[in-house]
Length: 203
Image 1 (cartoon, rainbow, N blue to C red):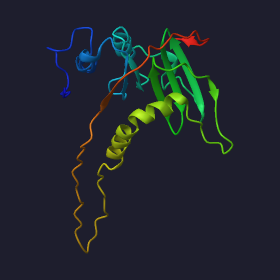
Image 2 (cartoon, one colour; image 1 turned 180 degrees about the vertical axis):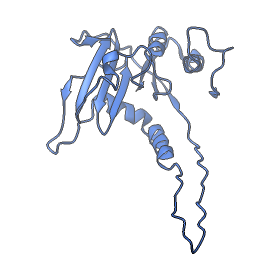
Image 3 (cartoon, helix red, strand yellow; image 1 turned 135 degrees about the vertical axis):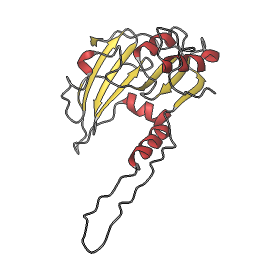
Image 4 (cartoon, one colour; image 1 turned 90 degrees about the vertical axis):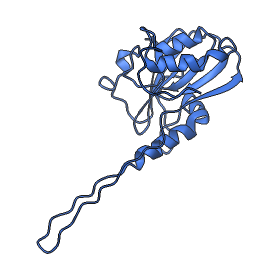
């Protein structure tokens, strides 16, 4: 177990971020076996995935689109996606996917084959969830659900109009967040992912 406490210059190498160093430290004992690692966007980055695949650790996770190394044309300022749209970029075995549901969802993976680009909706007009997102949810769904619940129940301050008849004191609530960023490691050996040539725009 390794608790992430923020930036630690003594542990993080000059070319690594603190989160990158944390994941690398936690996965030292499973190198070279072919395990799969699922993580949320707090840890996920192209640099981390490139590092871990050299150690035969395959990764999948949500990713922040402004993360260093992500394709520039997949960033929020350049994207104009409609509900159900999928955009895909590849670099070697690494695939970056942006899927538009209620918001843009970024996925980074070197486990899955790249999906097809386009707009995908069912007969009711709802966005069809890509297989990559469904697989990620199977492994990380409960963790992300906990994070969403923590964000949804942040306390708010209610404002009142002052009255000449009585004084009203606004109620102040403390916002306590008990759920932090989570990283789960599924320690089951998997077969190596074979590289597939796909006609996609590269990073």
